[in-house]
Each structure stands twice: as C-alpha cells, then as structure tokens.
Image (cartoon, rainbow, N blue to C red; front, side, top):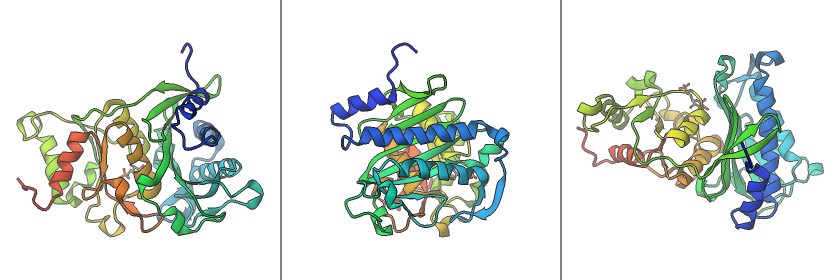
Length: 339
Ligand code: F6P
C-alpha cells in the first residue's frame, strides 16, 4: 500500500484535531497496539508453541481456561502496566481488579478493562480469536476500588479490539468514528486501512447460535422465524446466516458488511443475565458499533446506558444494523403484537 498512514501518524492527527482525551493518549494506544502485536505473535505460532491445550483451572465465569487465555492475559497486563497511563486494570480472566505495582507508576488517569482472548475455543481450530478492550477515566487515587470500574458504557473514552484472523487488525474508537488498522507483518506496524467504518442500516444477514432456539424467549423466536420465512414472510427479504463463535469476528463482520448479531438471555442463561460480559465485551463493542452508525441494546435498554452492578456482569446482546435492531427491540416491548 503506497503512502499508507501508520497508526502512529493517525493518532498524531487525531490528537491535533482534539479527537483524543489528552496528549498522553497516543502513547497509551501505541502501548495497547504493541501488546496486541505480541498476542498476535503468540496466537499465530499456534501448535508450534505447545500452548494450545486447556488448563485444569476455571476463570471467574466457570469456563475452563486455555493455556493461551492465561498467556495472553499476562502479555496484556505486563505490557500495559508499564505504560504509566493506568491506575488499574480488570480482565475477564481475573476475579478482582489487578493492582498495578507502584514501581510501574499506578497513578494514571485511566482504567483498562479487557478480554485478552475472546473466542478462545476457536484456538485449536485455527479460526479467528481476538482481544477486546475498554478504557474508562479515573479521577481518584492510585489503587482504584471495584466501584471505580463500575461505570456505564457511555463513560468509555476509548474502546477497541484486535482480530487475529487471516490478517491481524486493530479497530478502535475514541468517539470520533470507528477506524480499522491492519498489521503490516513486514514492517511490524499497524496501517490505517479502514477509515470511518459504517454499518448499513438495513441487512439480510443474522448471526445467532441456532442450537439454542428452543430456549429463546418469544421476541427472539418471532424475529428469527420471520428471517427464516424469507421473501414470502413479513420481512419480505431472504436472509443469510453466519456464526463464528467469537464475538470479535462477529462484530468485525458487522463493520465490514453489515448484519445483526444476537446473543440473547435464554431459559438456561437467564439466571446469569446472559452469556456475554457487559464491561469488557458488550460495552466496548457497542461503542464501536454506535460510532459506525449501528445500534446496540439488551432488548430492553440501550447497552451503553446499563448501570453495571458487578465487574463480570453478563447481559443479553442485540447489535448491528439500525433498522433490524430497532425491529427486534420493538418485539421486546410489552405492547408488541406477537403475530
Ligand atoms: O466470550 C464468549 C464467546 O466466546 C463469544 O466470543 C462468542 O460470541 C460466544 O462466546 C460463542 O458462544 P457459543 O459457545 O454459543 O458459540
């Protein structure tokens, strides 16, 4: 690619235009990009590392940890704690927030929440996985408490993900559009390849784990059944379906070619609140999706207005094409016609 803009140059430009919260943010995001680059290397080496198995341990979610879950968590923590911009961090893989040792500088203005290896059951399949992150402001002292992390999605100052697929991509927003960067493997830096990504308002593609159909509530059953009726049904169009089993890959597809992604709270998941985690999965993805012209909701409420009650809280997720998300949200209203 001739004259491609690097992530570094892009961030300098954004800084000049007042699109970054402060002058430190270029450095902070470069540090995150570097940790994603290191994770990409660990993931891409695949079976050569001998790290493809499962551990005996479970994370706080009760899910069996993969060796790579733990390795990538350590990479992200160790790299970003040294940047000096964070007061604390929290990860899917750790029950409690991580306290940054004072020697690294733990009086930063930001909190970092992340899922180091989203979709890790894809690892052995050589299928896409990713890292998701969300950045919140921190106005308090060093050693932030749990309550400091429990901010609604609207409080995010930045969100993004890295996708480790056929190429490695970094996609991020600071509230001025959603932009995608591809890792140039030769030069080992990220290059702006997808400026101002947009999700079309209409779509003919849905993503949902169909194997859970019998467990869904009426609004989701109704919507998917209407999609499946195709051109002859009430939606008047034929739908395609995709399921990648990694939220990063699903959201990337929304940003590249549109669609609607649904992970509802069904009969089995209701007591837990849903499958996906609010703070480091649903919220950052909702920020990216809204900045690309899409919508994101729990069905009852706009996602980024949900007031979190706990760090690992789960939520139902409906996100993507504006018109289809609005339609499905409408089916959740008590007044919705069940036909
Ligand atoms: O983090 C949970 C996750 O791996 C998501 O990335 C993905 O969308 C989902 O679980 C896959 O769920 P299922 O096991 O139903 O395919």
